[in-house]
Image (cartoon, rainbow, N blue to C red; front, side, top):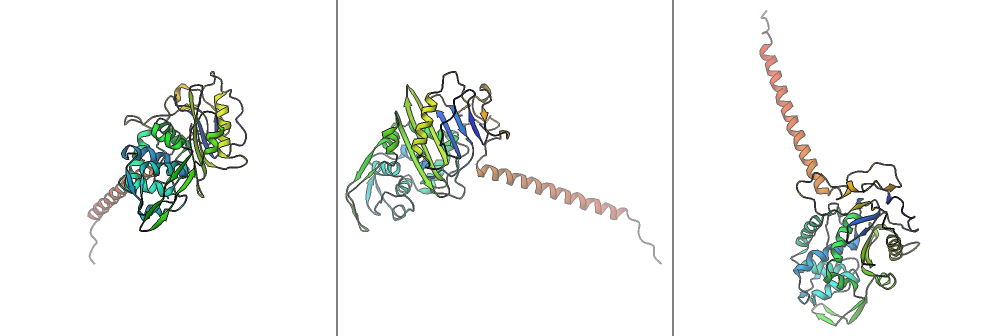
Length: 353
């Protein structure tokens, strides 16, 4: 699971054509087994699929019928938006539908503010990521708009997807095909009424057993996608990072990968298992059950490396190392001074002429 290349089970059929994501995973969401992957721990920008983590974080704190007054900051958020009116009141239900159906960045900020503020929500999202075992993830925005250090991995987003599909309220929002906003007015003007449709409608309409989907895009992230389907009593999940929508769209790539995954014979051994949170006694970041599965095939010969850790952890280790080096340098300087003084004391006094 540490490979940067393609990883498939020994003896599995050839993967579908036209999988264009730089990083992806196919997982069994019930057992946690990873069926195939490409660069699963590579860290990339998530774009709007990060909104699934936003929703998981704030849902427990926001009752569905609570009214939220939208701020000017939320209403003017850049990027994709549902068109919230500053000063108008919306239910939490309304905001979650906008968040998941049309990936409204304005709705993401409005929900974060209702949750205690953007900074509070971002901090709680990072805590939630750690609680899920998503150690490749660092959050800076609730909308998924690019942050300087905001990164995730396909492996981590699979953990988040697994938690999302277990949340019936979140699944109900995500599967809504369309929603309508009634007319709104405030001192800033008037909007509505208007209707909006689910951006992932094609996935829900054409993929058998579709139960969850979210798409994203920024210039830095390119296209991102996650989805889940249930067939024959099994729920599989797909995550794509740094993807393209050609020659076929993301939902079609996901559909092909689901078909491949559901057709795998029971005798095929998965390539790994999704881990949960790592306890304090665990020495490093490794997948649970890794020692029980045979070495999968990869398309690259480079050795597997440990998954990268968040930038804060790396920065902390750097600072600790710098402190140790600083103390060592100071100790050497003192030792040098002592040696120099002793040499001066032992040096014979010059003769007078």
